[in-house]
Length: 133
Image (cartoon, rainbow, N blue to C red):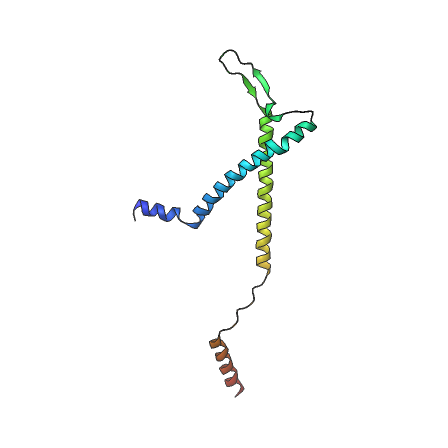
């Protein structure tokens, strides 16, 4: 088997395609959560804390001098990233919990036995007739 056909076989497996779709959707979801955190959630929190813009919270270690950039610890951005993570983690928790609940319901619901075919019904009737003789 050539390497190209082997790669094609690998790439077209269901798990790889599902994973690729999950990565793309996850990236888009990350952008939505980042916007939600930065543009919707943090402004009211900053307002409640006295008009603080978290993205501007820094600890200056060294001021900029001429063309040399300053050195600062941007802990406000770090707070935003932590909130992004918590929101994403909670959303994933809810999705996994819902999937587990659906799987549990599926396992608990006993499947009804399938209706016997006409051939099976006929054989059963013949068996019963022979038994009654």
